[in-house]
Amino acid sequence: MLGERPAVEPEAFPASKVHLLPDALRWEDVSRGRFDPVFDDYVSLVGNTLHRALDDDRTPEDGFVGNLAAKLRSVPSPDFLRVALSPCFTSRLLWQPATSARGALEFLDRALHVEAVISGRERADCDAWTALGDVKVLRSGEILRGVGVPGLPPLDFDGPNITDDLPTGGADPARFGSLSGAVRPTVIDRITVAWEEITATSEAVADFVAKFVQVIVPRCDTARTRFSSGSYRQYIGRVVIGNPHAAGAGHVAHAEALVHEAIHALLYMALYPVSWGVRDPRAYRPGERVVSPWTGAHLQLSSYLQACFVWYGLVHFWDLARQGETFGDGDRARCRRDRALGGFVGPPLLDLLGSDNRALIRADVVDAVESIQDRVLSRFG
Image (cartoon, rainbow, N blue to C red; front, side):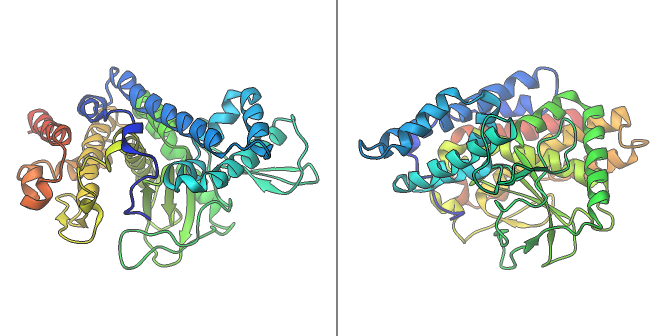
């Protein structure tokens, strides 16, 4: 599935906003407004696709769609957005074939019922979880709320919506399970401090993370012991944090993970219409890989292009933290910033691509990648 194209036709999507990213990811005051068109277009995409699904699935003898449409007209906006932008719903709506729209609509109906139970507008008719996995309602009427961090997107520690075996792009996939109760206080403390430090570093970055991340899923990865974070383009806005309890994975690592994966969410939204900045689905198939100048990892073309923007955003985030000494005396932030700078000070980023890969990239993405490297070299030398 990860290499497949979305079920919605490309012409149904808004135009790419990649040209906004070199300015937006510097986290200056002007950055806030530059993210809005990307987010607003994505919300419109989800809404328009939902309306088409309702129209296509409606039949005179089936009252389900009519009842759901009536519910949508009266549901409070916050409840609707929690469900409609949840990665579990958008994956069903945008990535499944149009013939499978009923499954997405049934998920939406059930998730809206759960939100109504939480707000006291309906009585629970069964045990069920929210679409974000942060609250469980019981048929008895009891509401079991998970732990949250004020201002941060919901935390899903136990929800059933994430699969046990998520692909990681390699031959050794992660194996995700629930964290033990013994380590959860440590994890919550690390995430809380990370969020406090992000907010102290830049309100623009904090607002950005809160907007583009829909849910944070801390899990134990039984296939390995190291800390990790990941995002998946079928589940836009879901941040999976693997082994957040690992030794050495303190609040600095968590802060970088949150900003890193939030940028991925932005990029998935900004370039969703065009298979992430490339003109040919071959960019997602096994074949020629690009060696990341930041990590040494061998990446698919689409992943490499995303990495260019992610590390650009991290350069500027950690430089703000260094200036403000929000993660200590500035040495931690300086080390993180210098690591992010490393990939930009070498050869031109697009020169690392083979000729076949270079030919697959859209012109607006080429311009943006060249622009971010020029800006980094001009500012940081």
